[in-house]
Length: 134
Image 1 (spheres, one colour):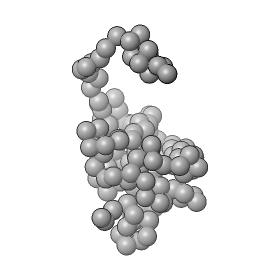
Image 2 (cartoon, rainbow, N blue to C red; image 1 turned 60 degrees about the vertical axis):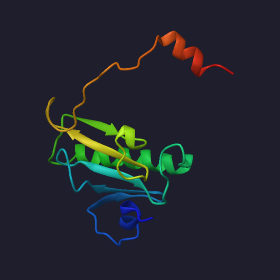
Image 3 (cartoon, rainbow, N blue to C red; image 1 turned 120 degrees about the vertical axis):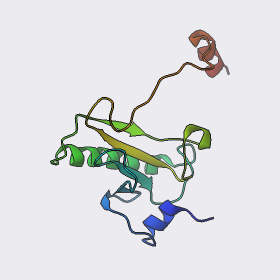
Image 4 (cartoon, rainbow, N blue to C red; image 1 turned 180 degrees about the vertical axis):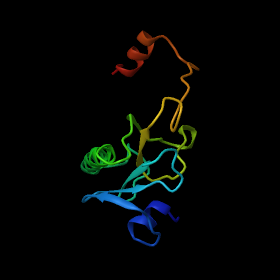
């Protein structure tokens, strides 16, 4: 099965790469929701965070910090940042290759926004017990 992110890593598809390290690649999103919106991907294919080795995740986070500083130090001068990663289709993952978004914020209601809902929320103590049951 073809993966657009794997094709970017192998240079079959061009991308505006702004940084990279041994295990990760950062490029500008082709459908940005704000100026400087960047995607950080693993260079090897892993579907999601749970499948991704810790060393690769570490390099992805290090690259995320480098990208954030690069954007912040540029003439773009955002007011803040959102960091986003979706896992599975129900959560909004469209490309089944682990990736993080760095989304600069220039205004409260501009760029990435979200509405917090409390659907299917149980008592916190009950959830704590479920998660810590051995």
